[in-house]
Image (cartoon, rainbow, N blue to C red; front, side, top):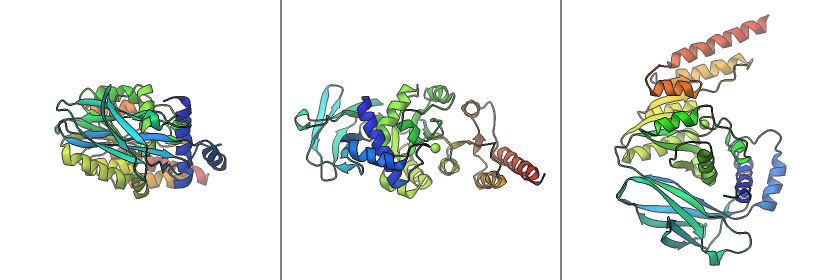
Length: 335
Ligand SMILES: [Mg+2]
C-alpha cells in the first residue's frame, strides 16, 4: 500500500473513531479537524477479510469497495480475485459495495494469499489500490493460539497505528514467532474490519508471524469486545478443536479465553503512578471475578515463561499487589 492509500484509510478510521466512539483519538488530534479532513480527502478503498478454514472446503472470499466518511459502498464495479497470477474469478459489487466469490480451498494446508483488485476498465479518477486477504487453511486438529492486537502486541491503541506512530510491545514479535513454530497464530481483534489491511501491514513490518487477522464488523463493534470475541472464538472452535492459548490485555479477553477452555494469559497494563486507590481496587475486583486458571503477567517475557512452563503467574498474586498498592495510596492520602 502506498502512503496515500494508507493515509486515506487512516482518515476513514479516525473518522469512524469520531462517529462510533470506538477508541480515543490521540491527544492533540482534534476531532473536528479530522472530520473536515475526512470529508475532503477520503477516497475509495478496497477492503477484504482474512479466513481461517479447513483445506479442501468451499469458502466465500469477501471484499468490499467503500468510500467516504461513512464507508459507503460503491455499486457495479468489477472486482477480481487472483491466487498468485491465476485469476479465480470476477464479481460485480452489489448495492452495499460487497462482493463474495465462492472458492474451493486447495487440499494442502497452507497460507493462500488472495490478491484483490478492481478491473482496470472500472478505474476512474483516483486510482483504487489493490488489496489482499489471507486464507489460512489448517487441519481441524492444528494447535491454534489466539492473540489480541491493541495493547497486547501494539503498545498503544489503534489510533496510533493509523498515524504511523505505533510501536510493538517489547518482545511480542519474538515470543509469537517462537509460538508460531507450534501454533497457528490468529489475531482476533475488536478493531473494525476496514483496519484489516493496515493491521496486516503493521504486523509484517514489525516482525510478527503471519496469521489471519480477524476483525470486527460494525455489528460486532456495537456488541462490545467481550461478546464479539466470544462469538468469534466459539465459531472457530466449532471447526478447530485445538485452540490452546489466548493472550490479551482486557479482563474480558481473559474471561473469553478461559470460558472457551484456552490457557488464558492476561497482560495487564497497570499505571502504577495512578494515585486513585479505587482504580486499583476496581481492577483487583475484576480479576477476582475471573476463573483461577487465568495467569496475569505484565510483559511478554513473562508470557514466554508461561508458555514454556518456566513460571506460573497466579491471578491472586496480582490481586494482592493491587490491593496493597491501593492501601498504600490511601495511607499516603491521610498524611
Ligand atoms: Mg486489546
